[in-house]
Amino acid sequence: MTDTQHTDDPSESATSSSRPDGGTRVRHDVPDTAPTDDQDLRDRLTAAVPSTPRLLRYAAAIGVALLWLVPLIGLFMASVRPLNEIIQGWWHLENPTITFANYAQAWTYESGPLRQALINTAIVTIPSVLVVTLLGTMVAYPFARFDFPLKTGLFFLLIVVMAAPPELIAMGNYNTLRGTGMFDTYMGLVLVHIGWGMGWVVMFLRNYLLGLPKELEEAARIDGASRYQIFKSIVLPYSAPALVSVAVVQFTWVWNSFFFPLVFMRSKEKMLAPQVLPLMKGRLQIDWGLVAAGSILTMVVPILLFVALQRYYKQGMVAAVAD
Picture 1 (cartoon, one colour):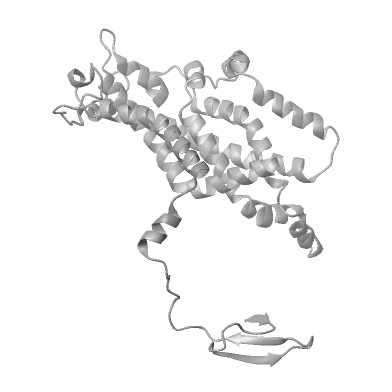
Picture 2: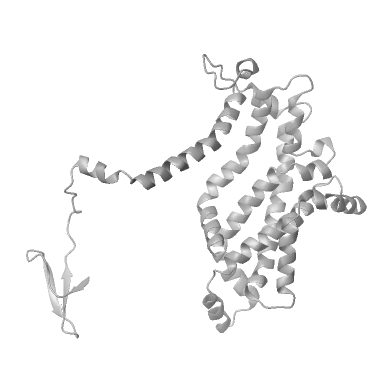
């Protein structure tokens, strides 16, 4: 329904009625068919051509994407070809031999089977992501909504811890885990990742929660909801995009972490995937196909996770940065 003083097309089927302000309310009938485009194909193609500035932005974006994709393509090509074909460069494609023997060898590699290493990595990564996401939300919510003593100082302390290099805290954590008997255990490594990731998670989620409307929480308080009920029924559901963004980034960091497992895990049967990959290079000659296959197998899980959750990931990242 549209409000107007007159109709431009007298042949258009419409019914009119008066309005209190003296105008005319016109009700147009819904057409039976969709409107047709009077432009021919050539005119539509001409109109679809982007302007010069937009074309330059497209070219820059495609160029950056290619810079990121070329190493990945080279890694994949090296993983599915014999060593004698890639030793001079994977881009030589004359009569290539495609084989998946490198993947089978990496999966059951004698010095460190990637099959067990991926299981160990999942054992450490999954609880590290779940716990730091839940605890980060519980800590970020008071920073975003409440006023309490030393609020600014505590938040600044979190930022400082986040900015510190991991090597700075490695020795302290090493002695702590030794003294508590959690050195070379999954639990010890999980606790290190939780403590290390808490700073950026709290900062990220605090920025996101600052953008949530306070009116929803105030309305729930008027209805008699407690702070816990508000947090569970309002804050957590509305924070889903940010929580997914945190989970994806934290999962990628923990899954690909090399320094912390190198320092805190020593048992061969407990090695994680980033620790096993250097073992595949051998002693006398590096089998680049084997290393490439192991790298591809390690990358598959984070890539699939990002592809499955990219819609929520982008929403959470944009909202947190914008707020």
